[in-house]
Image (cartoon, rainbow, N blue to C red):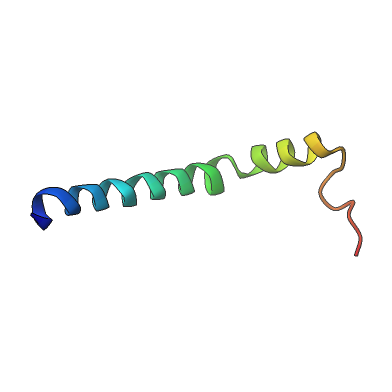
Length: 49
């Protein structure tokens, strides 16, 4: 049962998590940071404190 049900689900979970991490944190990091700060009206580095 473990080999036929749980292992494939776990493998897909790891694969999706890894690809999303690589996409968001490595490939599109600058885009997400710029998008986040532009939606809130301030730029990175302008926050003091």
